Length: 163
Image 1 (spheres, rainbow, N blue to C red):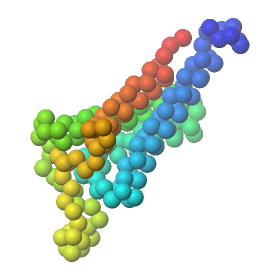
Image 2 (image 1 turned 30 degrees about the vertical axis):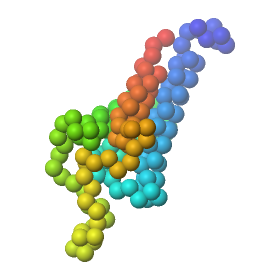
Image 3 (image 1 turned 90 degrees about the vertical axis):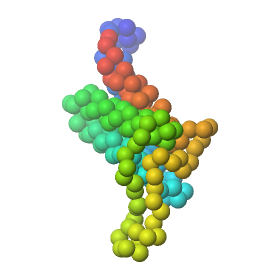
Image 4 (image 1 turned 180 degrees about the vertical axis):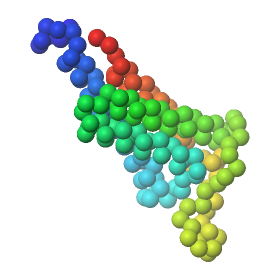
């Protein structure tokens, strides 16, 4: 029950949806900032599966941004953002498993920034099964596999929680 209105519902639901929207904006935004910062400032080159995780986060961030603009469709846009964030986490889980040797990944690797044959020869080959950086024993993909599904679940719960 809402203390100000004496009714069950709308104010509390609006607060939950607003919190869900903020999570849907902040989580992929922060994770993308970390990924891009590690690439452009830290010199870590992403592999193919790293890009896939980023694409899903960009989708989540796009839907969350649309939720700011399309207020009449805020709830479905926030849920779509949660889906994108959760998809990134699922890809991160698969990627972390490849890095850990739990299962085999794809055979494609990434050589970023190559425009000419000389660029290709001088560009490092980035393998999806090798960890470039870890914190507390977990790779960036593993952290994404923890953070993204947790955030997606919280966003969906806040968005769908009934009176």
